[in-house]
Length: 141
Ligand code: B12
Image 1 (cartoon, helix red, strand yellow):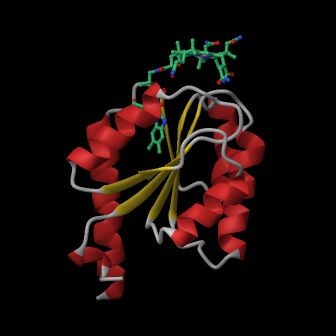
Image 2: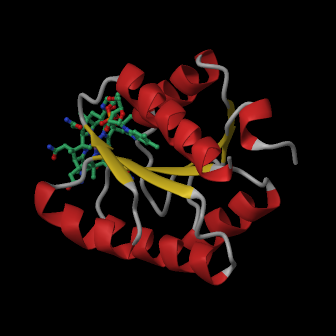
């Protein structure tokens, strides 16, 4: 694949388990596409193993999970671990949705890089991703 600065960021968006809330993930997909990123959506009812496998097969830079129906304290650490075990721990792992403040330390400790909850401005999410990409580029130089 081309270096990260010469191609659009590739982002996998995912929904895990029985969570069928789709509005947030749709909003994020539109916003990232509008910003020139390549977005792949896994669809609903995925397992962490399915998402990790899709992230590797699709060779994405970023994995974003939208979670509004609880279960994130188990599923997100599992996903982070599976990515690391597959040698894909350098992918940025984002989470969004309904995530109580008290769950943040556990998720961050487990390897979730950034959490965006209700009311997050999509422009801030796009800016964060562009900043992350710029940092990666500087690290390469
Ligand atoms: C609409 C809605 C529904 C709709 C969903 C329709 C659909 N197709 O999406 C329906 C009526 C079907 C529904 C069903 C249920 N719901 Co409901 N629902 C909501 C509600 C009112 C709004 C969610 C929404 O669309 N928000 C608008 C979007 C734009 O916001 P968002 O998803 O938060 O996304 C933003 C950020 O979080 C972030 N973000 C989100 N995802 C991602 C991903 C990435 C990668 C990034 C970077 C950012 C990001 O960016 C977005 C923009 O700011 C919330 C209440 C709330 N305040 O959240 C309850 C809520 C999520 N629902 C809840 C519940 C309990 C249920 C049901 C279990 C109810 C029931 N007894 O049947 C079912 C579960 C269905 C299931 N299997 O998942 C609870 C969840 C509680 C919890 N997690 O602990 C909530 C919080 C209501 C409450 N206060 O109790 N629901």
